Each structure stands twice: as structure tokens, then as C-alpha cells.
Length: 290
Length: 253
Ligand SMILES: Nc1ncnc2c1ncn2[C@@H]1O[C@H](COP(=O)(O)OP(=O)(O)O)[C@@H](O)[C@H]1O
Ligand SMILES: [Mg+2]
Image (cartoon, rainbow over all chains, first blue to last red; front, side, top):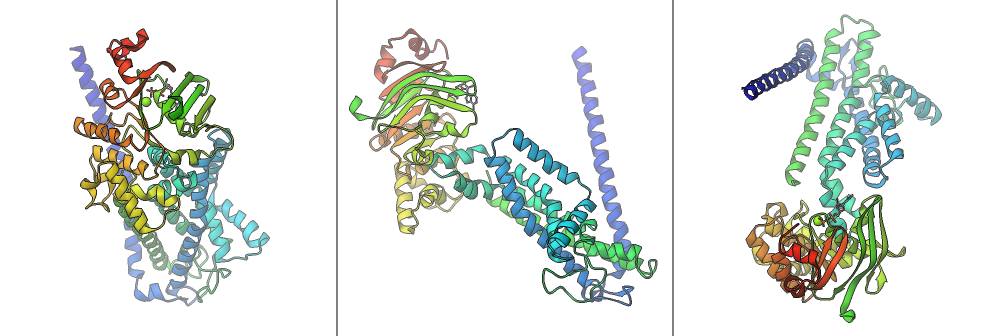
């Protein structure tokens, strides 16, 4: 009797719990969908072939956003090129080589703190260090480095998780064959961890492409009709372009459709890059099964 | 016996942190013979086995005292490279652990990294190793297929082939059949009988019949100590120590 009512209570608790979980999932999905739909409906009319392939004209109240698309692509690729190798090497050091203890714990806390620093602080650091001190000027190089540092914690974190998820038995099997530690890591551990590391890179891409504050002092130009010729050139960038049109443009109200159109392009770009990475990742997963 | 000893331990104590897992183990392992290590779970069999090819180096905070002499040289001497030791003393684990690679690449993985690049040479080596592990006939047409698609018993023989491809002097096996079905187990036991002509085999087993079937010598361990070490026949028919007798007759363990 007693047991039965406890069972029923447990069952009820479980139902309530799952209900709450489902509800929160629903709310989150709705919010996401709502934002996407809102931007889509306000922006899709602006999207034309000319919008995607021309430079802005008439003091940025007409024309396209091609330089900003190109600029954001350069900055994002640059940020990944900086952060991915550095992040993977750091994660390998932390999980495979460093003796687990106080020192590693302190480094991990540091990395986590870095992840929590507001992005404008990275922007100021980039301005002070890359733009001024290293004399890179406001440029693709300075912006990519700044964004690279910004997404470094994400990539280190994801890489560490991915490395830790590689079964210890793989390492043992390789080492027991008289294969050196470095060869074991590069031939067995890293290839197995790559799909997980890519997940981190995906998250990083989204963040790098969407941030405004880190690039406004380090890379982003208010307006350039010309495309960059070297990594020492300034570029326009999508998030900064939205910011400019919405706050400092010559005619803020009139350019609303352009603002939403640009936001839509930015979102599509990020989702597109994510999609590519997800496809690569899942095909790698299929090949490497354990 | 002394003449043909290939590896021996001398007064070995082993610690995980402050926990002493082995106490004063002195043992000789004869060349081209099968030596079985038996004893209840947790008595230190795996620990000893992993000491013999320095796999315990991988665990933080461990300490060895005493000596382990491989061809007369202490493998824990400071100038000894554990990677070199592991090339010459191979290991097969309890659970089959092939790499997520093709069958061929599993077998040739370590030889390639040790410097063999000639394709024909690698192919010969792969065939030879797979034949020695009595797996060749089953896989010769599917060498490029993932090792993960093999059955458990086949995977374990692949792991044996992978170890043999490095042409080790000693093969350590830690309960190699405990995760396998009886038919696969029988195959691997037959295989062990074949392999001892070329290799020295040290096998940990929790299966008394298996120890009796495959080995020439048997060491019985209890709580980190080598209680009795003798001819397998002697251990199983006429053990000198009461604890050994209790264990092999199933009174504890
Ligand atoms: N990595 C480890 N860290 C701490 N203690 C361990 C570790 N591995 C084994 N031990 C302990 O050492 C003792 C011997 O273990 P093991 O050699 O695995 O026994 P067996 O193989 O005979 O079952 C056990 O008490 C076990 O708990
Ligand atoms: Mg064991």
C-alpha cells in the first residue's frame, strides 16, 4: 500500500518535471523562432541581388552591403585561423601533458574568466595592443587577432572536452605498441577528437561573426567602397554596419529595411557556416566510430 | 631454469600513491614459455603485468621499488626509454581495443610509425601477423574494412596481430578472453599454444582451467604478494601452500 502510493507520487513528480522541461524547451524555441521571424519579415524585402553584390551608395542610404559581407568573412576566417591552432595546442597541453593539479586548475579558471570578459574589453585590449602598440593599425589583422582571443576560451573548452572524451583505451593501445606519446596524440587522439573540436569552432564562428564591440576599434570601417587589398586594410563588417546604420546613419528611420536586411544576411551567413561545419562533423563521426 | 630467463623481477614493491599494491615480488619468466598469473580480483596481477612494459608510468603518483631485469638490464633505470621497452614487450588488453581504423591500418599502425614505409613490406608484415593470430583467412578479403565491424573475438585476435606486428620478444596478456564467448576463447587458447614457439607469453587469467590448459608455469598472488610460483602441473595437483589450494579448489576468490 505504502509502496504503491510512493510509486504514484514518484510517477507524478516525474511527469511534472518532464512537463517543466518541455515547457522551457518550448519557450526557448519560441523566442528563437520569434526573433528569426521578426528579422526575416522586416528584412527580406531588402534582399536583392544588387543588395548582396554592390557597395553602399548615397551616404549608405541605398545600394548594397557587399564590402561588409566580404569584411565579415575575412575577419571570421582570420579569427578561426588564429584561435583554432592556438586553442587546440592549449587544450592538448592541458589535457594530455600538464600534470593535473593546482597549476592546471589556475589556468582553467583563467580561461573561464576570459570567456566571461565583456567583449568591449577585448576591443579595448585589441586597440591598445594590436592597433597601437604593434602598429597594425585598424586592420583585418588586428581585428582577427582580437576576435581570435575572444573566441579562444570557447575553442579551448570544446577541444578539452573532445580530447577527454577520447577513450583512454585508445591511448593505452597505442602507447603499449611502443608508439611515442606525441605520435599517439597526433595519430589517434586528435583525429578522434576532431568532430568535437569542430563543434567548438562552430560556436566560435558564430560569436566572431556577430560581435561588434571587439572590431569597432580594431578593424571596422564606417564606409569603404573598395574591397581590402591586404590584411593591413580596414574593412566594413556586417554587425558594425548594422550598428552604424541604426545609430549614426544619415537617415536612421529610412534605412530600417537595410538594417534588417543586413541582419538577415549576417544570420544567414553564420547559419550557413555552421551548417557546413555540422555536415563535415557528422561525416567525420560516421567514419570514426567506437 | 636460470639460463633461459628473459625477464625477472627482484624484490619489487609497487605503490599507487601511498597504497602498496605489490610487496616484494621476485619472479623469473622463462623464454618461449607461457607463465600464468592467477589470484583473486584486486591482488595485483594486472599491476605486475603493466610493470613489465612500463605501462604503469602513465598513472600519476606511482612508485616502483626493486628491479625488473629484461635481458639483464633494469628497465626502470633512468637511461631506459619506456617507448623502446614497449616495442619489445607487447601487450593485449582485457577488452579488445582496436583503433577506429581499417583492419590493415590497425596492424600496420605501429610498424609504420617505427619507420617501415615500404608498402610491400607492410603488406607482408600484415599478412604474417594476421596469420600468426589465426585471423588471416577471415579478414584477407576485407582488409580495408573498419576494425570496428569485426566480432569481439576477431577484434581480440586483431589486437594480438597488431602487437605481433612489432615483433616483440614478450607478449603480455591481461585476461585476454574474459570478454569473449567460449568459441573465441578456445581459438585464442590454441593460438597461445602456437605463439609460444616464437614469443614469451605472460598471461593474467581469472579462469583456473585456462591457466592449467595454456601455461607451463603459474604464479599465485594474494593481496599483492606472490604466494606460490611453480610448474603449472605442480600448482594445480599438489600446491605447497594452503592458500593456493583453497583458491584453486574454489574455496575463495
Ligand atoms: N590506477 C590505480 N590507482 C589506484 N589504485 C589502483 C589502480 N589500479 C589498481 N589499483 C589497486 O591496486 C590493487 C591491485 O589491482 P590490480 O592489479 O588491477 O588487480 P588484479 O588485476 O589482480 O585484479 C587493487 O587493490 C586496486 O584497487
Ligand atoms: Mg586485472
